[in-house]
Image (tube, rainbow, N blue to C red; front, side):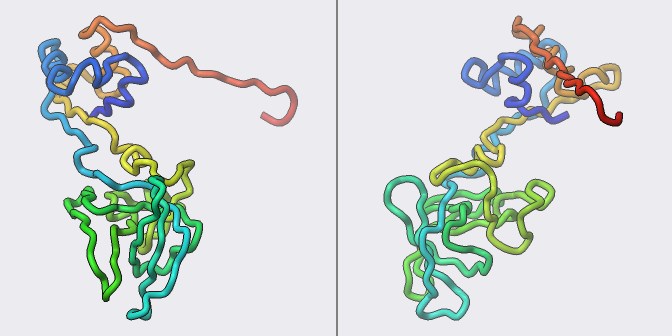
Length: 211
C-alpha cells in the first residue's frame, strides 16, 4: 500500500515539519503498521519551473529550431532553444533550467545549439514522468502547454504533485481496513495521539426537475 503523506495530512495532522519520514515510519511500524520504505518524490526533480514564452524567432542555422525568450519569474527572461513545433508566444510551459534534474535522471545544463546559447530545455509530459492519463488535454509528442492555474516561476514539482513523500506499507491479510487512506489515517491518529478529521459529504438538494 502506497500512501501520500500530503493526502494523509488531510485527515490527520502528522506533517513532515513535525515528523520526518524516519520518525513517522518508526512510530507506525512499532504500532503495528509496518513500513517497508519511504521516498521523497521532490528529490527526483529540481530547478524546473513554469515559464511563459514571451518571444520566438527561427534559429538562423536550423530549419526546424526556434530561439525562445522565456519568463521564468525571476525578472530576467532566459533564452531556450527548442525544436518543438507546438509552442507559441504566450504559452505556459515547463522550463528545466541550468542545473535541473528530471525524473528519469536527466540533468540539464546550459549549452550551445548550432551556435546559439540555450540556458535550459522546454519539457514534454514524458520528460516529467507524466502521461496523457495525468493531463489528457496535452499532446503526446510535443511540449506540455500548461492549462493549469499557475504563473511563471511556479515550481513544477508542486504543480504536478511531486512535492510529496510516499510511504510504502506492508498490509497483512488480517488488516484489510488499512488498504485505504482513511484506514491508515485512523492508525496514524492513534499512533501519534492526533485528532482524526473525516470529511463530511455534502449533498445539495434542488427542487423541481427530473430525478
